[in-house]
Image 1 (cartoon, rainbow, N blue to C red):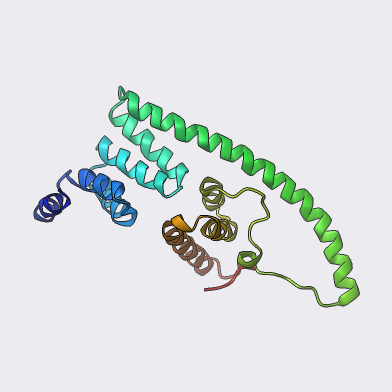
Image 2: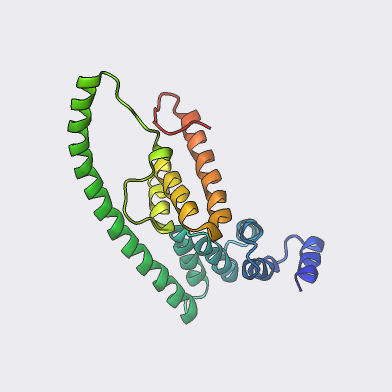
Length: 209
C-alpha cells in the first residue's frame, strides 16, 4: 500500500494523499519521513484538518506535545464537530498541564537548591581558588523526573541546554526510543547554534559543537 501511495504522491506532489502516506509511515515507526511529509503537506494545504491531525500525531509520538496540541487545535478548527479530535486534544492538554506543574515544582526546587549550592561553591572557590565547573550537558538537568514533555517545555522556553540534557538522560533511560530522541537533540543543537550566531555575546556553559 505504501508503494502505491508513494507513486501517487510522486506523480502529483500537491496531492492530499500525503496525509494517508504519513499516517502509514507513522504506524510503521518511520517518524522522520512521516513528519517531513506532514510539515510539507500542511504548508500546501493549511486548512486540511486530516493533515494537521496526522502532523499532531507525529509530534506526539516524538514527545513534542506542545506542538502536537497546536496541530490538533488546527485540525479541530477545520472539523469542529469531530469528537475524536476533541478527545485526542483533551488528552494532550491534560498531559501538558501535569507536565507544567511538574516543571514549575522542579524549577522552584532547583532555584532553592541553587542558592544553597552558590554559597557552598563560593566557599570552596575561596578556599581552593580553582572552582570546578561541569558543562551543562555533562551534569544533566537537576530534576528527579525526566519526561519528553518536560524536555519540550525547556525547548519552548529557549532553555536549549536543559532540553538537550533532558533528552540525553531520556536516551540513557529509554534505549528503545534513543533514535527519535537523538533526532530532537540534533534539532535543538542546531537551534542553539543559530541563536548563538544571532547573539555573538551570549555565553553558555554547555559544550560547543
